[in-house]
Length: 159
Image (cartoon, helix red, strand yellow):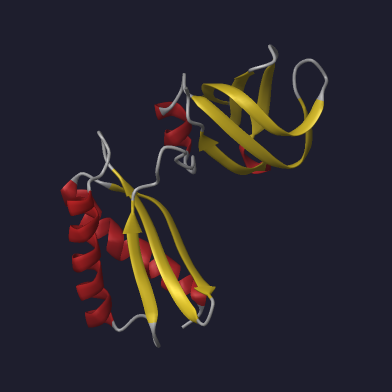
């Protein structure tokens, strides 16, 4: 089965496990590391996830994956929290974390409101408006980054 099919199906199965537990799937990776394949899920819930939450999801998911026989060959299943530098993937993430410090990297050079070109934007997340991420940059100006130009976005640890 192609890699894309595995990731899509695992996302569906994980959703069935996570929703009743009040959790969400933040990100999923299915890739080769060394000689083995690794299936890595990052889960979250209001107030954060515990080690017990990760263990519960891992056991339930492992059982369902065994029944479905979805992944041929040896693989390692890892379930963890997204950590303090949580990735922002969905529009809802940008809305939920408005007011927080974020770092956004773009695929290409973009201008901030002061006309400076850059690929990395660091500042306070203002939210999403008209398909663009709005940030008040640490240096002062604001930036408006179209969602399709975002290569990677995550929360940053605030001291």
